Image 1 (cartoon, rainbow, N blue to C red):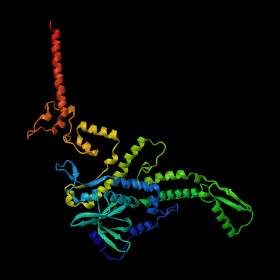
Image 2 (cartoon, rainbow, N blue to C red):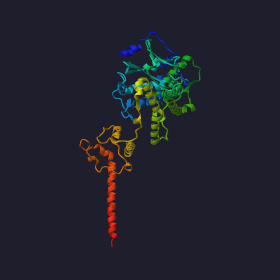
Image 3 (cartoon, one colour):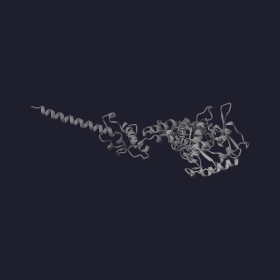
Image 4 (cartoon, one colour):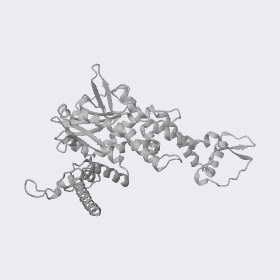
Length: 454
């Protein structure tokens, strides 16, 4: 950590900024984000909108809960296996810094990237080796692309100090980009949808704070001065305003009359508007409405399951691919890339079906020979068992000449090799069936010859 602070605070003490940095800070502090509905849409205000909060949570937690680590090619070059001896694997899989877990780090990085289009982390290297990843707030980072297309990241702190970092010192997860080096601000692009949702929610809240009754007009036969108007308004609000005064009887005197204002068509459509805004916000952030708990009356379990699968395919998978490629680009050396090292985010647990579907899937793979039984056990969180590492051979693919008792065949050491039993079990069964058929044919031939004899 000391090396990190020294690296960041080693620059001049005066503050330098760019338009991108100041723009993000103005949004974070509540300025520059006003929508046409009158709501100032900051990041804090956006997350107070339940739909935006649920959508961001669905993306960030979906990426965070999936297993993430560093992999290297197997010795035969036909697959990939975890690089358990590489120090980077521990950072990605368990703990990237001293106060965050891998889950928390990826969740925070995704929240920043989804809302602002950019997620940043400082790469702290010691002796060329990555020792920790330190998340940076998007509003503290300004990106500059120079004439030679190289990137410089300026990190500005609250005390006015800043540090200039090279591109190789920053892990940068960006969303869709127009200028190729900074992600597009999703909150700014979806500001009107979020602002209208917040405005309709506030309108409903204020309506129910008045006992779910619209306002009205108090009129008098006489002329009232300003002081009298204020006194009557305050007295009326005291005995009739708020939820606790709902349904109470009012007594009017002095020629006062109460005229109830009816709800307009726009007022009565507020609920419909709020439902539509859920879909609008989901479209802007990139998740399906069903994922945030919104569905119509025609939704069924089957359709919901299809949408959950679509969420993994169309919402999470693009972010997973972004994260993998970013980590490969920013964390691996050229030698490690050439050796085949790669980061992998495993979304398969999110695609798992129910018990019946998984059982049928495993049975199909095991019987067809492309999945071994121990692989199925590992997928279900069970430990491997001896003798279950060899694929079974389908009956129609046997050579018809297996050993009659494969489990009893001695190995080079003289002991029976029990691991061969699983591999040739089906072929041995086929041999016994063939022998039994031949014996039956022999018996039938003998019976037929006896019946034909004079």
